[in-house]
View 1 (cartoon, helix red, strand yellow):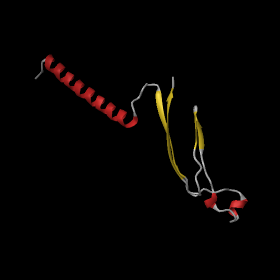
View 2 (cartoon, rainbow, N blue to C red; view 1 turned 90 degrees about the vertical axis):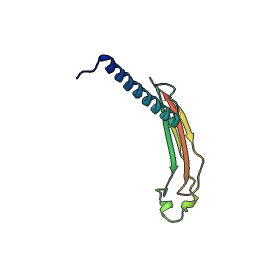
View 3 (cartoon, helix red, strand yellow; view 1 turned 120 degrees about the vertical axis):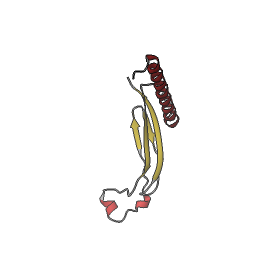
View 4 (cartoon, rainbow, N blue to C red; view 1 turned 180 degrees about the vertical axis):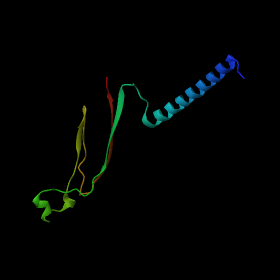
Length: 108
């Protein structure tokens, strides 16, 4: 039993409307979570440094027992593309930094 072409077109249009609505809803969710993408040629990079565990030095002074690891003052730095970051100095051999940096990079 064949259906008239008008009915087939109607069902196709309804399916397209639902698919478009789902796509728009998905885009809203992504934009609200990660920020609206300003350009299709933009990438967002996120760098996280949370903590360090059991930092040690490899020299003889450290392994001799004369060096106290609680006296360490670690820090970190990075140069990414045109951005640079220097962390504040922490204390001890198990520092918590909890640093998150986000960078947007345009590309061709």
